[in-house]
Image (cartoon, rainbow, N blue to C red; front, side, top):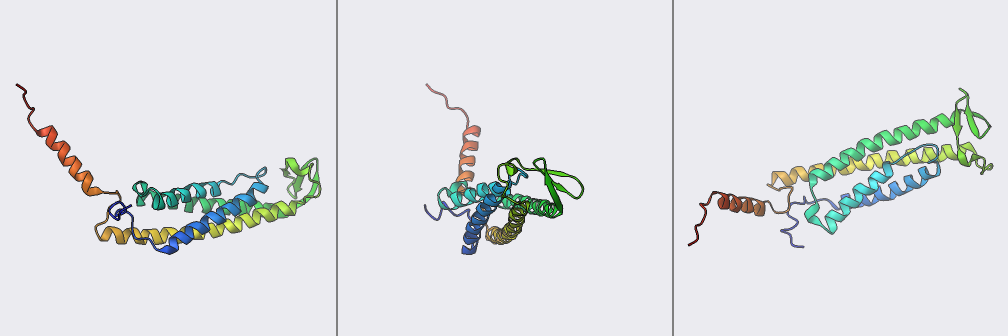
Length: 197
């Protein structure tokens, strides 16, 4: 790959690459923790993070022609909002488990008599509700950390894009080639038809 093919990619700090890998590791940890309690609650912020970071890493390293910094910024904003909602929701659900008062009929009852069901509760009588609560609390804490990582990457990428645009950078791989191709197409459309003898 020549530098001409990568001219549309802003000069990104090496810190961003390390933050992306940290986001992947934290997302996998959160996915593992929440998979443990998935029969209670759905939590898919980790899967969205995996998809976003795979797009980023593949387009930076393997296929730079598909890199678009507007897409990266948009995906980071989406992930930022997603993680904010997800870790706050999981934290509130983990907090609800602190009010469990007793078990019965394959339910864990709260002091408001709400039944928290767990299919595996009958199969794992040694598993305590505190185990699920602690897994959710750890997932929420890691989700908050993931949110902070996305704040950092969004800030760093936004600064890099602003600097790139101030120096005349574009978001497409070769804007000059697109302009030349458009001019050639316009010339062909405006040229009088050739008559054949």
